Length: 228
Ligand code: NI
Ligand code: MN
Image 1 (spheres, rainbow, N blue to C red):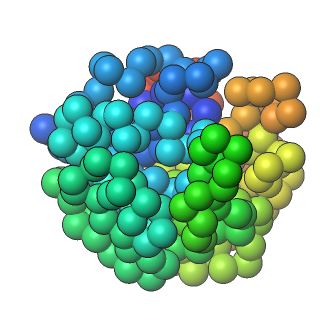
Image 2 (image 1 turned 180 degrees about the horizontal axis):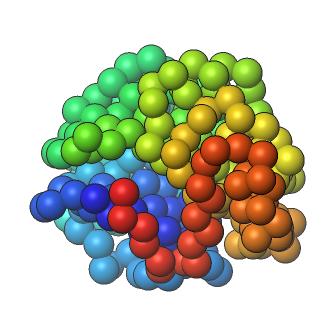
């Protein structure tokens, strides 16, 4: 299975013919490594409604017929935007898609989509525990550190994708504490360096993770992939 960072919190998961986009913010993303019209995934998974995560979801799903899976209010709102296969789930729930499953887990953040100066699609943010093939990947979404990450770690994580940008999410110090709760085999940092407010030293984070935990930290550049 291949995991590609597309910049910010956008990722592409590929396993055989199954393609899954996560939080596909590409148009208007200064760190994006690709354009929205390059992708026709069967599935799009969303952590929350903020514009830097929903991104190009509606345009891609309408063109490619993708199934969009999100938390309830966001999934319902996406369904009102002309996306035919929009699924609203919620924390604790597992939803199947072509090639795998996603379980929605808590995240400490907010969630709403800004449209013409109005906040729409309110609801709660989530993290995603994705199972594809025989691998388990945790996308934390935007979140603060929280102790229940211990429970998520009990799923047995091959990969944990964690924000380290600070300001809107946990920064490197709390992300390091998260690794100690999650016990993943591999950590991939994201949600940093996209904007001035979230600039971070990802190599220093990698060094601390590998010094203080058993995990390997893989720092990707936008457009780079890791085989899982
Ligand atoms: Ni957010
Ligand atoms: Mn964000």
